[in-house]
Amino acid sequence: MQLPSALLRSLAGLKGFDKESFETVHSSEEQFTSIRLNPLKLAAIQNQKSKIPWTEYGYYLESRPYFTFDPLFHAGCYYVQEASSMFLEQVLRQATDLSKRIRVLDLCAAPGGKSTHIQSLISAESLLVSNEVIRARAGILIDNMVKWGSTNVVVTNNDPKDFARLPGYFDVIVVDAPCSGSGLFRRDPDAISEWSENNVSLCSQRQQRILADVWPALKENGILIYSTCSYSRQEDEDIVDWLKKEFSVAPFTLSCDPGWGIVVSEEGCRFWPDKVMGEGFFIASFQKKEGDVGVTPKISGKPEPITSKERTIINKWVKPDGLSF
Image (cartoon, rainbow, N blue to C red; front, side, top):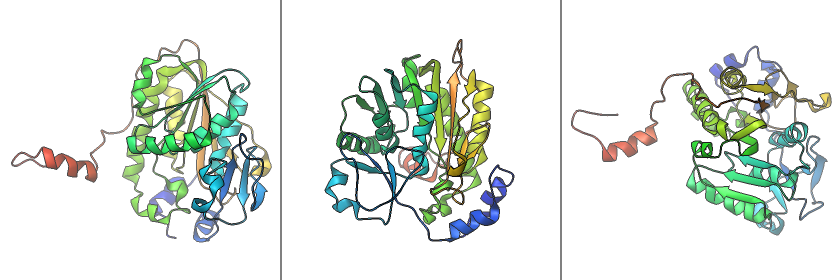
């Protein structure tokens, strides 16, 4: 696997980055299959290899079975989820009193991994709003939440800015933001061809806009959890710095068992695939300070150009003589 040289250059100097071991682990064919049990339906499953240490119901499997042929999978008895992303449980347990009645928004929820996880952690009296802005993906989210089985979940299909009409409503907002996806190269090598520095920049601007749009919906002293599956500092630590500059936030310092291999810094937690049994992941959390008025912040970067797919659609409808997009 040939990693983009621009990506490797951009990672130099980041805490925990070791270029040689990073390239070696991406060249190996080692992959991990992990699942998270539904505590309402299943206590154990066959083919377990070992427990994922940072989550109560997560397990690595000895081998990857044909999930589509397993009735337990279709019954929502477990969810197939990447192990690193299950660290969300630690963040919620450390930053929030899950025994209380709380309102949680999972803003970018499809296909449902984090929402099913959150639902397993909150109390029966709490409310989870699982949102997905893309309609087709929202349908997949609905299917997975129905299979999981719960009565305290509402699935929505809204733009992030729509939630600003609920000022101070949510105790916790989780933003697993759309990103350049470099953390999943080992699992999806074809994605390497789609990576570019320009795409990283576009994703960073989109992430800022999403966070700015949903910020008013978080209550004072509420918790914001931000995560990506990108290695790029521009989408991770730089977003943390932007949040601290533009909003009245108090970063929440997370604690980890040193044996887990997770790299912890002031900005958040990084998962390097040469150090953990999982893929690339970044997560950080913040508390909204009292008195934050939610003013619209400045979003860094240049205006986003339209994509080739968007250009094709536009040209079908708007293309006067002598004008092109």
